[in-house]
Image (cartoon, rainbow, N blue to C red; front, side, top):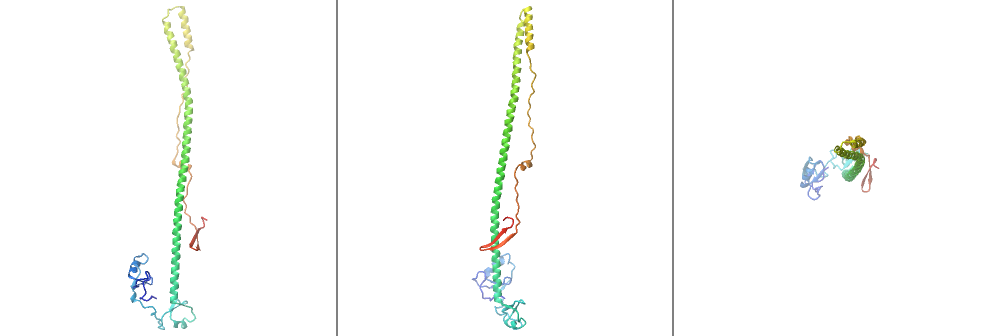
Length: 279
């Protein structure tokens, strides 16, 4: 039953409790009533004037017209002291004020337990978030480190391939330079012989000239022009490399959600949650 209207506000415990919340069964002052109606969970609660309530102790037993001060634990009904020896004879009873106190105490205990559990959950989530963020940064660093290793390996392979191309192309150019030098030498010798030929054209035509022309002919025959060498060619065949091939060269990462069975163990300062999968 409601308490007396003379009670103070049960929220601020200072102003008169002039308003009574029917849903909460508590007295409120005008200010606390406004705050109560603004809250999401209690905005639809119904109030009535405290002066309209039946004063405490005035609830009467319909049969004996006595004050209802007990609750029959068997029938779960409010009774007066005379009902104890009547139809509730042999039953067990509790005082209404004791039941109210017990219920309020139980509710407060449950609320505090849930508040503590919520606080612990918030702390656990915050710790998990911080740990996850640190793990993300660590994974990103590992990816960058492995990428740099692969880049250095690629740079090294490129440098080695370029050095090999230069070395082998130098040998091929050397062969061409030698062939070019031989061709120049033949050309110079040919020019020398051609000058001799022109000089002989100015010489008197006699038996001596015939001998000189034959000698020149022998020198011309001895002048050998080497065949052209095989000219080197160099090409580069591109290897088709897809982005997926690059990704396969690197390690992998996984993001998984732990779906543990939580054990709740009451400790000195709250609750302990233990993940059965992450022990």
